[in-house]
Structure formats: structure tokens, C-alpha cells
Length: 211
Image 1 (cartoon, rainbow, N blue to C red):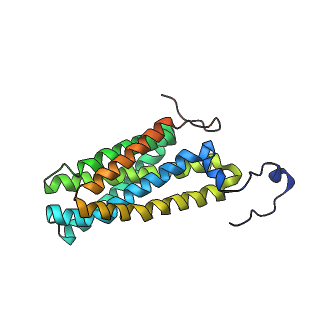
Image 2: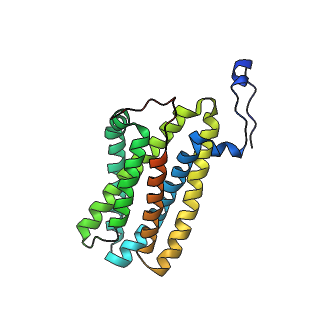
Image 3: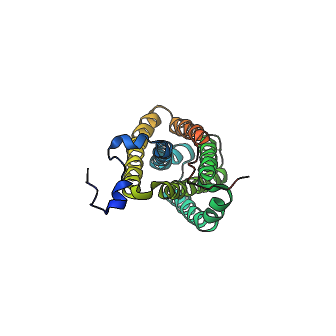
């Protein structure tokens, strides 16, 4: 609801029309939806994971701490080592697409694996997909936003919050029905994100690498 500050005449000529309808602009709509989708999937996963592995695999607090800490460390390392290289080679949009596919597959695999080491492995590497996706979307928005950096950043935060609110709520309701249902639902949501990413057309202003 904040008003834009007064700028010089050159900037004012380029000023966009403010309002929530701007969310539906072609350059913004799909990335904002993907932000909400992966935030929903990640929040649902993180809020239910401890209960899931406790009920299904009898994980101790130590086991859960190892998984969460290991995933966070691996995700941070992947961001430092892989993010710049991958965005230069395949671009943000393809990196988001591949991260969504990777994350959807591993979220589903959590319901399939049965041994301690397999659940440990799948869960730890799952964080890589989420941790590469987040900066890729932010990087894309910073390139297309131009004078709308504040708007893009605000909407990024809003859609992240929406996912963070509804992910745990729906995940908890489904968990009460069946232990695996939250992960099935998160997989479906992430697959919808894959479909959106496949339909995503890069703006002419973004020069992405071509295979």
C-alpha cells in the first residue's frame, strides 16, 4: 500500500501502473506462482517431516537433527558451488524447472524408501533442489523487474508467506488421515510447478543460454 517515491521525469515516463493486477503481468505471474508452490512444498515438508519419521521410522531427535543439519549444509554448499555455474550454463528458468522435477521426485521417494540410510540420503539431497530454486527465482525477478524491484521483492515475500501459511495447515490435516498423504500432495503441487515452468516463456530482455 506504500506509494512510490517521486522520481525525475525520465523515470516517471517509465513508471508502471501500480496495483495488485500487476501480479498477472506475463513476466511476473508464473514466477510468483512458482514461488508460492515451492514455498508451500517446502513448508509442508519441513513442518511434517519430524512427525513423519518419528511415526514411521522411530527417528530420535538426534536422527532428525542430523538430517536437517546435513540438508542445510549440502544446500548451502550447492548454492556456493553450483548456482553460478548452472545459471550461466542453462539459465534461471531451466534451473527452476530441473529443481522442481528433482524436488518432486525426491518428495515422492520419501514415501517409498524404508531403511534408515535411504531416508537419510533422500532427505538430505532433497534440500539441494529447494536451495537452488529459491535464488534462481529471485535472480530472474531482479533481471526483469527494472524499476519495479520493490514490487517484485514485496510480491516474492507475500507469495512465500502464503505458501508458508497453507503448507503446514494442509500438510497437518492430511497427516492425520495418512502419514504419506502430505508428501503425495506436495508432489502433486510440485508437479503443477513443473507444468508451469514448462509453459514459462522467457522475456526478450533475458538472454538465457541456448543448448
